[in-house]
Image (cartoon, rainbow, N blue to C red):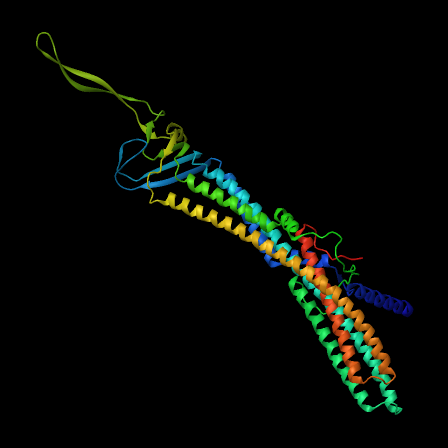
Length: 485
């Protein structure tokens, strides 16, 4: 029994460790992962999604506004004092209860096409709001790509700093042995130890920059900040000039047809045009068709009681002259019958009435409101046209600047590559001279610093060129991605 309990405990422990090893498995974030997470969790995008939903609701309402309306009313009223009852047309001096029921419908046949133009405007606004959402997604995607490349750059910069520190550490060990053997001056050891301390500081600074870039990317994509955040380090393609040089003009012409910010601005020009049409429709005649059905009940409406027999009486009516000039009394028969309150359903049936009518309204003077609305709509249309021009101008400037930056980065990369090659040879030569005591530690450290700076400049030019070409590819309609081998 004890053996079984021990085995069970061991098995449980192993399963627990296995679970935590899987649960704690570190996720490696690709660029696509970061972009998708940012788009799904960014608050600005969520806010714009609500704006799209609001525009959809406005569009639905503008469609429903084309349909006839239908309204029903009902009242239950007690009247105290003298009044004329609308159903019996008699005076009432006692408390009278009455009911009115009314159903009406109205449809606008013509109103200057205002409702139709409003529908078209809301359709345009919906498309524009969707393009605004695409603009937000694109901007966030570009920002994520920039921060992602910044992490890769700082990672490589850290490796450069560590490599230089390893070389210096090895030199410290070698010089120390020479000093202990009396083959080298102690000053050389102090110089190389000072260089090591400086390079250790450079490693710490590089680690801090990498940590900050990791933090910045996590904050950008709205991810809970953690020290375990890691990104994928792809094998980047060799940086070189493209085989076919695409001019800024070609990129700009393509971007004009595909960029969502341009499409949104163009749609807002159309929306402003529809608003102008709506304003002009406000000064046109309005023709509508209306129909209604109504009925009611009165508490003083009465009818003959069929459950009682009529009472016949002889009533003196006057006299009549005869031929001999005598007067004879005239009597007539009068019939009366007991009454009762007229039934509720019977009154509703008898009091039913229906109406159908056409109504024409012609605006003549309303404080110049219609004309003011037209003027404001014209101004808004001009503003939207200027906004479109500004968007096109800014896009052209951005593409031209990105193109110039990409060309400059490529030139800087090629120049930095040549400089690294030259500095590497110079450093190797300096190290050989330093190893045999033909160079001071001061000159050796300077040669090493020059090589480190050249390698850092090469990395900076490399990632700057990658980012600038990524932007240009993006404006050509290509998805945001980093070219890998």
